[in-house]
Image (cartoon, rainbow, N blue to C red; front, side):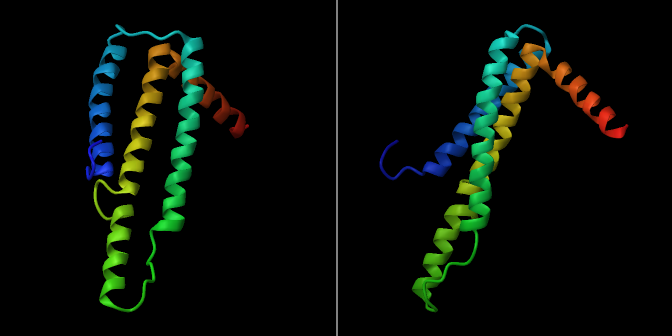
Amino acid sequence: MPPGEDIGGAAAAGLNDAAGQLAAVRQAVASHTVHLDPVAATALLSVLDELGIQVADLVSFSDRSMDHQLHFGHNWVGAIMDQRLRGAVNGRPDSLRPVLSLLREVLGEVTDTVRGAAGLAAAADDESAERLNRIGR
């Protein structure tokens, strides 16, 4: 990345590009032209689940620790610093929080696509239905 390039903007652009490419893969899965071995899919889903947990932890941390008023003094310099630092976390579409939310969304779509490609989506639906039936008894 060249010096001075906006990291958040590059990350958001990359995630949007990945989401667009993922749509083509989902379409191939839906038309049954792409298949994934269930054993390989299970291993991949394990990694995706771990990544999802890490992203959720980062989102939670940013909500708890970074998105509140900073106190740099009661003057115009302190107010400007507060505004800029908070903007880097949550003030723009390419800020930390929106980019992390987009990452979580894309990971969810990848997970659903992998399940569909391996034929695991129906199995997951059946398993969820069975759990709900057991809870209702």
